[in-house]
Image 1 (tube, rainbow, N blue to C red):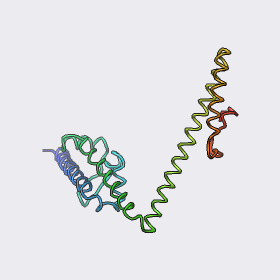
Image 2: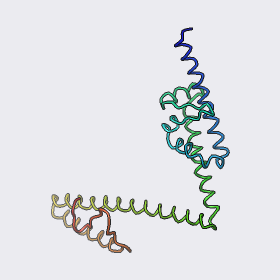
Image 3: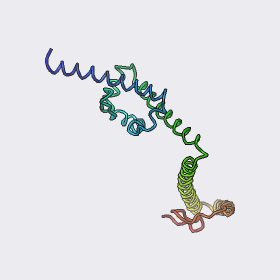
Image 4: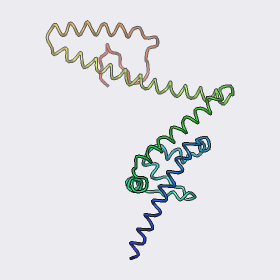
Length: 192
């Protein structure tokens, strides 16, 4: 056997052992997520297939490899790469649920309440961003409809004007007007 064949065989054995060790680690995380909540490197590795392929734990003989190589080795060692990916997703979900339980179980403490407030503020900010995006898309659609109606016959223009007034009236029922962001008032009809 030549040196390159021996090296290739050694690498294959080590890669197979690495994938099996990784699968075992993922099974342990899924079974006992509380023990791994503070392992931020592992949690980051569970976010995507590529991140998991780049994950290395020399103490457990888990080696870093490219995603394509990991897929090939996992298919050979486990029978299918999808098994490793299902384990990855299951671990991520188990860690998320465990972290949520830890926070929710502590609602009477100041830290638990602070955490809840921070989560609610984060959710509110995301919802406001979504609202701004949706409002802008809606405004653009109204501007486009008005533009298309202007090139149509007189009856279509009248119908468009009537329906636009109904929409404007429904938006007058807003409780809090949107005054920031890139939202444009429908009546101005400006494109930004």
